Length: 260
Image 1 (tube, one colour):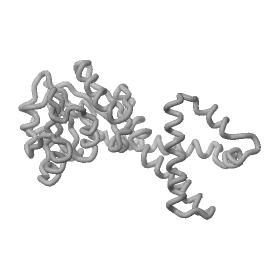
Image 2 (cartoon, rainbow, N blue to C red):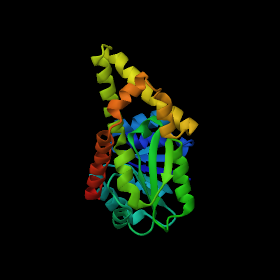
Image 3 (tube, rainbow, N blue to C red):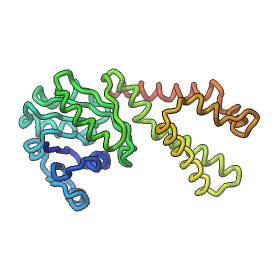
Image 4 (cartoon, rainbow, N blue to C red):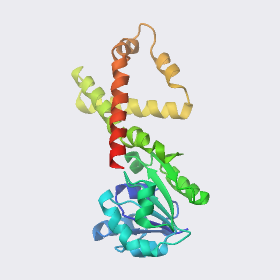
């Protein structure tokens, strides 16, 4: 299967890195230096012409900025045909808007990735139109699964996905920043405080993922009665904290609905 990319930014590169047969890939990139970089690093074919990608590829990843979608669509719509599948990772572009822009012929898959895709540890939510072949959706799952985790959902869930996993890396980093700053106030050097906070968050997430342990028993297990963690949790485990998090996600989801 020939895989094409409209756009070759960092998110596209994250997906590319998970594709085993790089010789099957052709990427459209109009910046010569960037095209040369990807060709040298991965051995992929590159072109400055999106129409060439539309003609040659069966699975087409749309990885451009939202404001560039209509321009790409105007160039490639006349060339798209039955049997091709367009996979959009563009924020805020619904399946209906993609159908309007790219026409009725290709299958359509919408993906909401997050920045961790660039470290092959991404979280990608996937939805597709009813007429998109299941084999095409499975191919997208397989590729993105090589760059992290995937989940297939209804499009109506995508505002919540955007709020939780799409915007989540910033909230996660903000929590890390708060923990590191707290450590610095206790006398730790900045680089040490960040390392302690970052490795603790990373290791905890890794353990929870690999063990499958439920969150509440894990929390209770760390909080030994009368111990240091329990003392800290008295400050953290207040209704206001969870309400702040819920309100944060609600605000992001509301903005996602507005942009759509």
